[in-house]
Amino acid sequence: MTKPRLWITRRLSDATLERATRDYDVVINHDDQPGTANQLITASAEFDAIIPCHSEHFSADVVAQFSDRLKIVANHSVGVDHCNLPALKGRGIAVTNTPDVLSDATAELAMLLMLGAARHAVAGDKIVRTGAWDSWSPAFMVGKQLTGARLGIIGMGRVGRAFAAKARGFDMEIHYYNRTELPADQAIGAVYHDTVESLLGVADFLSLHCPATPETTNLMNADRLALLPQGAVIVNTARGALVDEDALIAAIETRQVAAAGLDCFKVEPGGNPAFAAYDNIFMLPHIGSATRQTRDAMGFRALDNLDAFFAGQTPRDLL
Ligand code: 8YV
View 1 (spheres, rainbow, N blue to C red):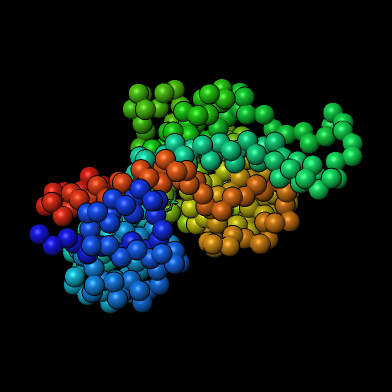
View 2 (cartoon, rainbow, N blue to C red):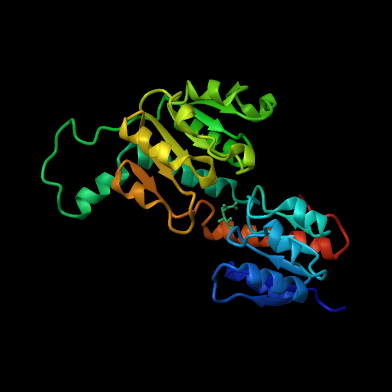
């Protein structure tokens, strides 16, 4: 039987590429540059399947120009805000993602950002690294303690719950907002808030774990930032779209927000150059799921979805 033709848009893990090459007629974008609209449109005529990352944008306009050959977009990501799902489904193209497998890696990075933001990681590293550390005092770089503090989580899906599990290890009091209240065995004592506003009032620390949708764009705007307890710390490992970045800077300026830990930005790659002036904004370049173990698991999950699809079964992560 002829192997399905597969385009892999970015340099995925070696193990993923090896398995894909064994099982599919693969073209790999070894240049590792984001696939352009024109490349996607061309690929739709030449391939049965694409494994893209969140760096390839399947907008309605692009999908409208697709040829009929492409049957499945098996995303190498849990987030699918780069895909216009109605447009893809309208063309009869199956779409899958890679949930579960990146939850721990992303939650670990959220913990790093929360700790680093709370304890002056940027300023502390800078002063030692530059040789400018010439004094010490008990009042020096005093931060905010996690132990016993209230942690608000927006979006108690897989990543949110993995983050809560890690935060319990720091004896934090977990509160959450989710569209629906979790069953007790998943909430594990976390306090449910049925509005974001109610959650914000108790969030000494706030971590965002919801998808980017039209409804969640600029979820953390000036009005909501003002509802946080004074001196709150904000962490975002989900999507840059969730935070009004100008409003965040304003809240940092007034000390309403003491610090932020950000792995996601409105503009990626690149981030927001205005953040660079603030040592209390601890930033990383969208690497939440970037561990070897998780990259393999994401690639394998995307391939599992493809295998099922081409075997005539329903892929596990069909959206
Ligand atoms: C990935 C992510 O690195 O899975 C997601 O939604 O944002 C990241 O963890 C990236 O999307 C890989 O394509």
